[in-house]
Image 1: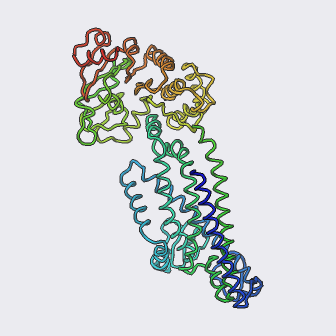
Image 2 (image 1 turned 30 degrees about the vertical axis):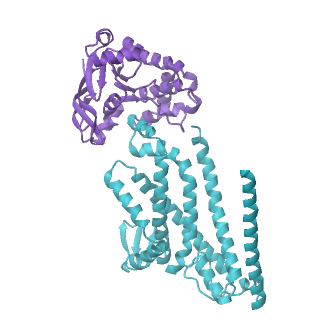
Image 3 (image 1 turned 45 degrees about the vertical axis):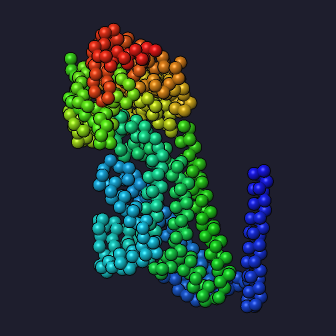
Length: 299
Length: 247
C-alpha cells in the first residue's frame, strides 16, 4: 500500500522534472532561432582583446579567448588550492582550541567562529581588499622576520609575490571557510567518547599529543565528509573574487561573455569548468577518506 | 611506611547543590589495598577520580604520591601525578584505532621517552603477565571484554605506577569474564601494588582488601579493616548494604 503510493509519487515527480526540462530546452531553441545566433564556439579561438591583471602562464590580449579562460581557470585553481590549505590550518586550529583546557584560547576561538559566521562573505572580501590590504602602507612591513612582508602591493613570502587581489581573496576565503571548518572539527571531536580523553589524560599524555594521537584519528571519519563539502563551498565561493577584481575564471568569463554576447556558451563552459573542479576535489577527498577511515573503523 | 594518598576534608559539589563528596578524610599507605564500596551515587567513583585530577575538588587538601593537588588544579602538577598513578575504567577506554601493542606503548614512548624496542619488550612482558601474550597485534574490538580490561590494566602498568586506581573494573563485564580480571588484580595485589578499588565484588574485597571504605551520600560511613567490615560492621547503614548485596 505504502510502496504503491511512493511509486505514484515517483512517476508524478519524474513527469514534472521532464516537463520543466522540456520547457527550458524549448525556450533555448526558440531564442537561438529568433536571435539567429545559433550555438557556436568559434569565438573561443579569436583574440580575446582584453588584458589579465595576473597570469601564471604567458598571456597577451592578442591570445585566444580560450587561452584567456584557461589562464583564468588556473588563477581560480591557484587561489582555491591555497585557500583550502590555509582554511584547513585555521579551522583545525580553531576547532581544537574550542575544546582546549585554556579558557582564553577557547573564548578567542569561539569569538572568531561566532563573528565570522555572522558576516556575509562578500562584505568580508571587500573588507580584506579595501580596508586591510589597500590600507597598508606602500613601504613593506615585515611582522614575521624577513620571511613575510606586507604592503599595499600585496604579500611577499620568501620572494614569492602575491597580488593584493589574490591576497584579499586568499585571506577572505580562508578566514571565512576556516570558521566553518572549526565547527566541523569541533563536532568531530565531540563525537569521540569522553572516556577516550580521560584515558589519555590518565596516562599522563598532554592535551596536544592526546588530541593528535588519540582523539583526532577517531574524529576524522566524522570530520572528513563535512570537510569535503566545506572545500566544495570554498571553490564555489571563489567566484566572488570578481568583487575585488581578481582575474578568476568567473570574472574573465563574464568579460568574454560581455564582449562576444555568447552567454549560453560562456555559461556552459563555466558550469563544466566548475563541475570538473569540484569532481576533482570530491575525488581527492574520497581517496583521503578511504585511506583514513579504514584503519580507524576497527572499533 | 610512606603515604600514597592523603585526603583532608575534601569536598566536591556537582551543579551547585548536590554534594558528591562531603568532608572526606582518608589516608592510604604504600602497599595497601583499599576497597571502596557503597550504593550507586554515593561518591565512590568521584572520590578516586579526584586522586588523578579527573575531577577537581572544591575544598580540602589532597596529596597523591607526595605531590599536593590543590583546588586550583595546576596542570603541570596534575600531569606529574598522572605519570605515577595508573587508572582502570569501567568501560576499559582502550584506543580503538591502535593495536593492543600500540595502546600499551603509546604513553611509555611519548611521555616517559622510553625507546620503542624497550617499550615493546615491556608490553609483551605485561601481556604475558595478564595471560594474553598472543593478542599483541590485534585491535581492541577483536578482544572479549575481559581481555580488553586486562589490556587496560597492562596499559596502566606500563607507566610503572606507584598507585593503581580501579573504577568498577568488572561492572561492564559478562559474569563469566569477571574472574579473569579479578585474578589479574589479585596477582597484582600479591606483588605488593598499592591499589584503590571501587567495586561491588564482595569476594574480592573480603580476600584481597586490607581495609574497606564504605560511603553513602558523599560521606565516609565506615573505614575499617576488611575482616571487621564483613563480620561486625559498626554502622547500621553498612550492615543494611551488606545484607542487600548478599541477596
